[in-house]
Length: 605
Picture (cartoon, helix red, strand yellow):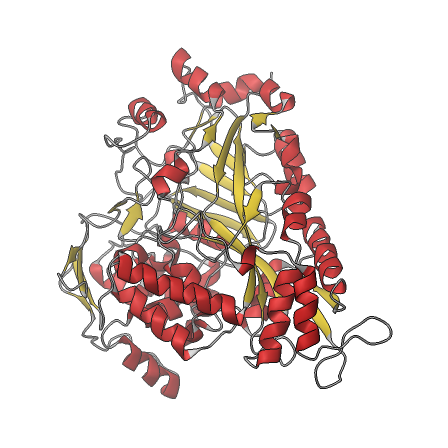
């Protein structure tokens, strides 16, 4: 299934926005234009080199600029230049990528630059990519770039690991600024999809060396980029405020290509000639509990819901139609299949649940067969999800909607039989022991919100039915992420959203060199790693698809995780939020929306 066909099935109930368009109501009325909404999980910080979580990345994507980006109005996954003047020049062997930047792009003002305006130059991208390799920053993105294998970069990193100092001034053959506005990346191996990596501003956004050297370890608190917004206030896990960057370059609302939807062409016509960004400020309040987040929107404290809490979706939708309360408020409803996957991750290095011995593999596969995915979909997601068969997300390369695997099975009888055969014996009390006779008890990390507590009940019920005891350790999401990245866990549940229209990212979840970053299950099998690297070098086609099938088979065999579901997402916006649509892979969407302050004011009368 293509990304374009998937997004084409979107249900968009933005009738109020269409009415505003037809009646000609002005979106330029007086008053400050502020977009207010909530994150469902707290952020961790704002340094592209150091962050992994979605919520921090949603902020940095709007503060920093990558050379490329995903086009707002074109079919999903279409690349276009951002700070680059054009798409990169790519060698025939997919090893050399040359980028040329637009002149006259400036960083936001900061004391690190003194009184001078600081222009973005090619050396800034060279520096920012080197930071990902610098062990000091413990970048979760390093494994991705290690696989890419930029010529000479690994050697500089290895030297830094020995000396404790990364030499940023050392010439690297595969990462060079050719002149003020051109830089070239040369890879050791072919990588036809490398350009996707240079389209995520939350990872490869240009960071100025002066800023890093001034703020040092506090650079997470001081993001300074060339993007449309700048951070002006941050109370950790409480409030994030960003304002329009007065140094932002002259950029205008994009035209719609011929392949664009009717809605996109209408937006392009309406906003033709409008300078970006169109809003003045963004205010974000992390609210982790679903009910308070929903009530804040209903009470008008927020203008937008980025992902309606799935456990409350019946309050927004009756089937696929907006509920009467939303219709009365003329709320716009956007329901789309999300390009994501949720998993129950197991620590493959744990002495109880990890390992590659037959009995350990049998334990994990039994847990997978005994896990009640249907109950998760019904109770937690309120049927706004469907069972996943593999890690590959719908809308990314290699997804097969007709495929059925063991990951999609719920078979407690078979699960119990597996445990019996491999020596996990039941005692007189009904609980199982390990093959060596010691007690079998597992521990799962959970977040302390209502939805995750309900998940814990489903896990407990599923595992207890197999005679397996499980207890829970509660912590907030950022703390759990730190624990999991350091290997201090047995089981954790989380979701992964696709950052690009390719399935490479989810296969990294089992790639050994990515342990501590993307490989949260800490799986390490040479045959898997070899296939993963080989698949990266091939263009899309039958040969690459065969390697993806082999990777999927290894994941199913070793069972480092239970692949659970793909979810639908529902976004909500009041009618004065004009121009929003959910664009897969696009994090930097704030610049493209407008606030109709006149309509907003009338709604309060």
